[in-house]
Image (cartoon, rainbow, N blue to C red; front, side):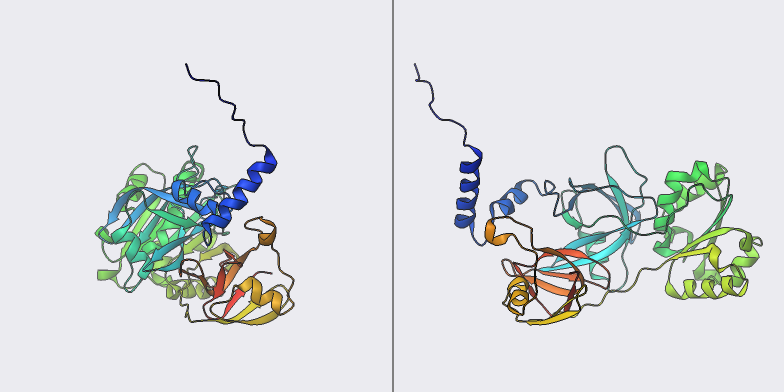
Length: 362
């Protein structure tokens, strides 16, 4: 017969001591890093998502069904998220519209079209598989439908510009009474969500105008006005290439109805990474020179910048700041994290070094 165990659960103080000891043993990794390997979606401070399904849409576009981690706070149809994707040791962030309506199970979908020379888009379209874990940022953007809904709506989209509009339609098509969608794609086969849009048109939920640029040429405001004579009377949402949106802006302005046009522009991303650089703190305007092997936290404090930090007291993630622009390198792994102006990707300044000039929110 086995004697009763005399072991007792650790008290709060002992548990804290055990975690600190484990941290010392695990250096340069922390116990939280190992827990993240077992359950990447557990963290509320470092949002991630797991790919559950990869669904082909066209030969060069796929929909990724994602399960966000605990920190996910939901989205409004039409908004976008930034995905952080590790490609050859470099973490690259790109913005993609959420194409699914809000769901009770918390899952979301984004649809990615591979573009020529697009490192992230081609990686996701060709190599993403169920089980892949991606970095995720909170949903943002004001390219959304107002409440109450407008009486008459026009959507103008081209290529992957259909993605935010698809999120709106899947959520609110039954609430919109008079909808026209003009969508431009090279051919009918290239139209992302083409079959679903045609089904909505057959069901009387919208009037669909397909513009096939391979034969008809680029969609112009004049061609749009011919297809939708009452466009000036409609609240309009447009998303697509910059040239199209610029032309629409000029046309709506010339008609005196610029306030009825809402556009969504996805900017190109070009970040040059190096070894060290200047770190600018946007809130204070202070700029600090930082070496490629020096944590940003140390470089900033050495220059007299008061930084948030709980690292030295055993409090992790107290030093996290949003990276607005530029590139930083994780000193533990060598991985790069990049951001374009306004991104606000969160980084730990205690283990991140400047990898070129960068701007932090502080």
